Image (cartoon, rainbow, N blue to C red):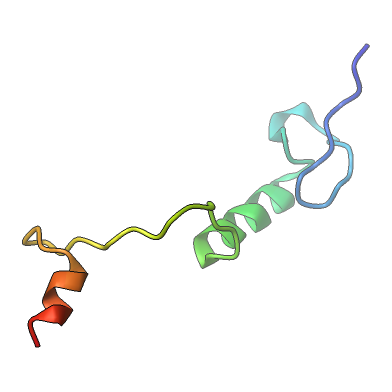
Length: 64
């Protein structure tokens, strides 16, 4: 029988299968909080932000 996965937040084994891959709601919400606060980042080249009118932010700065 395969072992249960380890919680990516606190490194414990899950107590209830309902929270997989986390061990509890607390770890699930704490991990979400890290994503929302910007603690976790997806690697890659930065992208230009686009304003509502479709022009990039870099275009706006170069006109001044």
